[in-house]
Image (cartoon, rainbow, N blue to C red; front, side):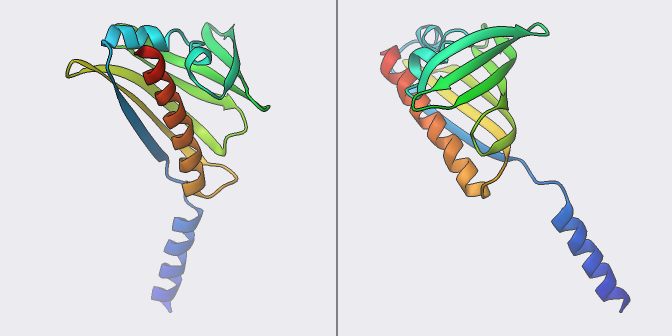
Length: 157
């Protein structure tokens, strides 16, 4: 009987325990120098110039941090905060404050590195699913990254 109770207790702790973070990493090779690609990515609101689903990006500040409000084509808004930026390393990290994506606790980094005679852009994020199965949340973020990376590659040529 004791073993059954211990097993039941262990199971309930495992089920009720915190959700593990999910991760998505996507990358693209670009036939342009890292400096040219980083310039294409631009500032925190530069995403409005290369991501195909962004209609408009509005920049503001909150507590010394940059906040971007992204208006999506077809409706919807995402508000994001830049956590860090390193123009020498060519990367920045941000978090989603609010939006329609099925995720929470979202943190993402986009970075550029030299690769052969061109560059490699990598976009990676960690998050938890919210209101959708893990696979659907990962699929949504992967779609965002794929479309954005294609936009960067097309514009940086």
